[in-house]
Every structure is written in C-alpha cells, then in structure tokens.
Length: 121
Image 1 (cartoon, rainbow, N blue to C red):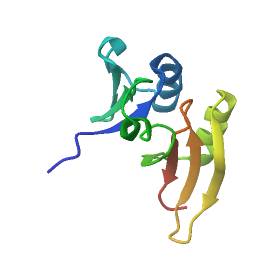
Image 2 (image 1 turned 120 degrees about the vertical axis):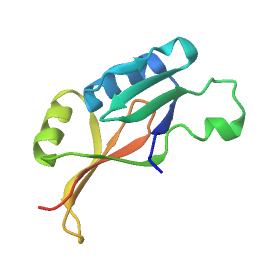
Image 3 (image 1 turned 90 degrees about the vertical axis):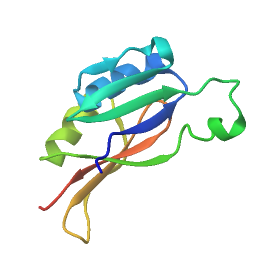
Image 4 (image 1 turned 180 degrees about the vertical axis):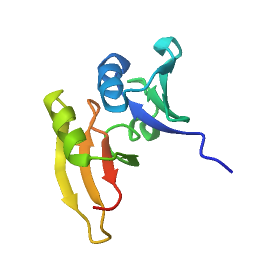
C-alpha cells in the first residue's frame, strides 16, 4: 500500500493557491475550476479543496484546524526563514523535540495548522 495523497480543506482557493505554491514549491496537477487544486509533492498529491460557505456544518468544521499534516525538510531553519520572509505565519517556531527531530507549526490563510519536520539534528 502507498499513500496517494492528503486533503486540506480551505474556504478560499485564491487565498490558498499562493500559500501552497510557496510552501510546496510543487507543480500544480489540477487547476481550481473543479473546486480543488492538486499539488504534486514528490509523488504524493496534496489536494487543497474548497468548502463552500453554504456547505453542511460538518464540512465547515474541516476548515481552520490542526491537519496532522507534516512536510519533511532537510534544513528547518532555512525553510522557516524563507517561508517567514514570504509572509507565512508560524504559530510555533522550530523546536527540538525529545525524539531528536525538529518541528515548526505554520498556518495557512484558512487557519489550518501544518507542520515542518526535520528528522535528526
């Protein structure tokens, strides 16, 4: 079995597009005409999907939360500085974890929290 992709729910694709393009630096595999954008992140699809304002409450609750999605980087300090300079909001700076790696938490324009992870020191 192989992970094919992850879905992240937003309220605005025009706001999400530049954020995820900067974060992932990945090509777009699908445009926003169908209500979602697919980024090819090293062979795993990151699907950024719009939730309409009139969607049921249970769908609305998918926007603006901790996603549990982590993006592995080789140099968290460098990536953190680069994304911060590009206007990305970090809610937690890079921090050494008890298991030996580093984590930093950032927020997309819809309020979703994502993490950068660097394994090892």
